[in-house]
Image 1 (spheres, rainbow, N blue to C red):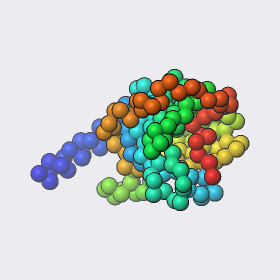
Image 2 (image 1 turned 90 degrees about the vertical axis):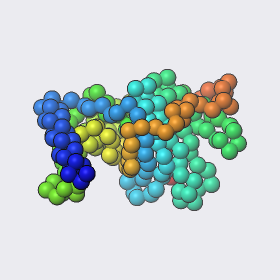
Image 3 (image 1 turned 90 degrees about the horizontal axis):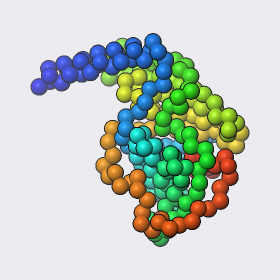
Image 4 (image 1 turned 180 degrees about the horizontal axis):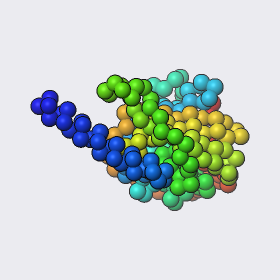
Length: 218
């Protein structure tokens, strides 16, 4: 059994290497799997913890759910947001009180998917490239968000295009995103559907540059 596992690992590594070589030559932005879930942590560049919790993302329909861990820091309120990026709708959900706030989202870029105009910066190893299972090869991408007067940097796995980390540098704030324990599945697809008590809720006014990044602040 152990030999079988090792053989599968070798085959998988070879396939990753072939895929990486193909991407390497074209330097084109890769696409994340349709479904991903795991833990997302957001900190300011000053080192302040801003949010930590479970995320679910469907790249095909561009829907994102983030539920903050209730044990995070000493907060009195916790974030539960559902974003339908294609429709430009952001729901802030309060399941305890069964209330919902709905806002328009004019700016629809985020750090779960590499923008098509991203620039491939480099491939690097995190950890050791020579010791088995002691390193991770990542690809680094960067670009600008001129509408927000900001720029970003993203790191993805070279095989599979899973987002590992991301940085956002803007006029108002600098943010660092980390993703842990990522799986290529979502346990409950209903996380992408707004609760029944969100139906009929009117849109609240939001500035034209309202974005995903505005959710995270000190």
